[in-house]
Length: 464
Ligand code: PM9
Image (cartoon, rainbow, N blue to C red; front, side, top):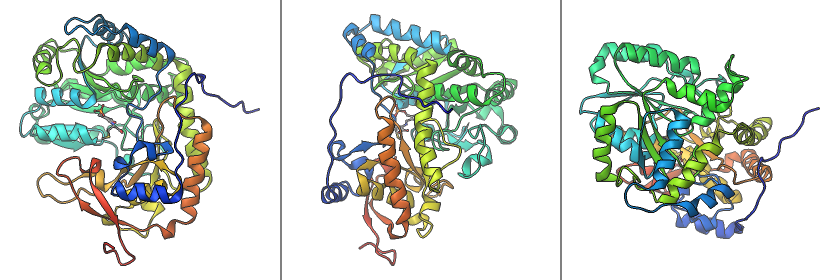
């Protein structure tokens, strides 16, 4: 008999939700320029915009806040956080930052020189933006299959070693300040990297004296997939798999807002003494003292506690189960989603969902708007709008993947909420021919997806 799984926590405090009627949702959507980032959260019923900073903290984390030492320098809370990072991830040095992009900023400034190339297993918006700000060029070295939503592979986030080797030969190892490996790969659908692939990337890079820096934002989810899918790891604890994963790198950037189970915080970690000294010098310019890096003492306490809670096998097993619980309902109904179902989100394939829309009509943005209108469920565009423009030609980058992300916050919603989301997506799929495209009427120069505004297009593709 198939035994069902329930959330490995019970609810101690609840946050009440607003349920808007159809008309109110339409007004909220117009006011937000058809951009889900610009809708007020009080107008959202189920918020699947992001899993970033949206986790529910445990009673122990709330209690830890009280312990926060708000000393400007040498806070006790900092030493607890530093200890947790060293113990769980295994790096020698840690620099705290206010969130992940703070760490990306420091790493990019410290390592990248104009003209350098930074290979990575698919781009991420903020990561690439910092690489480019420092004169670097991102080079995609993920396996080709990662760009195809229909291909079902256990480790779709893997690096194509030939691509990496070819780049090293073409531009020279001295032009590659580090290789950046995301575990898991967000924009590929939350797809993991195998331990075997990490080991090979590390070996190749070390032959050429190139450091490997992980984007560890969702590293615990990656470790769980290794346990499930990679022979030899099925009986290991997730925390041990995680430490082994990290041992195939020289450092990492971390957005604590995801796999550290907190609402704010991040860090840069490394083994290199010289890089650490330089990062300690630079962090004071952007984040604050190396003993708080933009976080309050209480934030650091909550993060230290969250780091330990996230590596509990029961927690992570249910986390992955809940994402799959939603994804499998959509698959059963024939809705096109990225396969396999990833670690933090279910991604709707907007190209297949809305084949009547051209990419310039922003299919994923249009689908995200339609979903909000239908049920008050907020999702996020991850397609041509997020991909921005080519920094040299100014042309739109045209990613193969045109996706809507239904991102599941950690420990926040029940499986019943997932049912409501599934019903809404399935009902939209049944009336998909009635969903029209959008035109962009305001385009910010950087990271345009956050603030861009749109208006509906008429049947002939013109703004109404
Ligand atoms: N990710 C997300 O919703 C929040 C911002 S959306 C642009 O997925 C990776 C893999 C991320 C990430 C943020 C960051 C930046 C780095 N790497 O948001 O600065 O998914 O803490 O982290 C978001 P911060």
